[in-house]
Length: 416
Image (cartoon, rainbow, N blue to C red):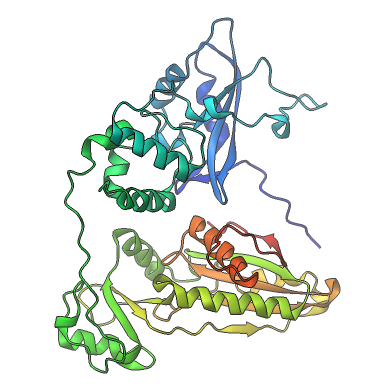
């Protein structure tokens, strides 16, 4: 039996990019004022990592901004560490190698990585307060960068929503262009409010016409083609709208793949009883019913452009798999049988979530493989998905920050 212990290298995904921290450390070492340095990835929020640089300077002190400017000459923005920690010496193992586990957690000053500047206007004060709340920091200065502090696309949506509730209008695009409170304060309120037209497809509707689609320009023939492919027909169609640019790229790679699916995300969980597994699946069904994106399919056959189709009801299939007990680890057998390298999802069917489970007699438990497609969830969103499932299981569906109390996360392999 082979146990999965982790990667040989230290590669990690930061803001959607695969990064080797040792490459960042190598660039740091080219600065004449740096004696030794190492870079590691630490979890900023569940499933989301940020780079932290540990630096031993030469005799003269080095400013963080100077190191940033030095790295920006050779590295892209997403490879610039979010925090810089200065040490007298790097901790070493008895073998003389860097002891990464002994490296200290970065404090608030290291995370900010810039000199703190207090807000100067009511708008800046509101933005700094909202950012500190979203990022779970004690304070945020007006020149602190949202993404350098551990922000990501999912938190960006939360930030924009909290701003909207306080009358500060902006959008995610502006946040990417102006990722500091000082920069965003200049443009807040200048953008026209985004008006989302109401959904005109009523519940129980048995015939959908072009006038009911406020977000898509489709002919009646195209609508009829979509409706014919949805179980239950028109009464099971909640909405229809185009893909986002990112989804369009994912769909392109999905269609180009001749084997497997490059955007399937596998997770293996273990439960100590069948009852706990059933509770997990029932909670997952409740979460699917709650969120439109989880009841979304993508259709393109006979259409001028691909469309997202939200179903009113999307049944989750939970399939039991018979394994060869003599062949070894049950979890590994599930991973191999439904590996994204060879298993392909039908994204024209909702939900784009597949569940396979099997008995693991050798360990007196059951194991479950969850396959989620990136067309509907990314890595960070899946952490929230598991947290909401946990909240349903313990009877608190509004608390999304709980961890699943009766499952063991066995492995989450990177098939990338």
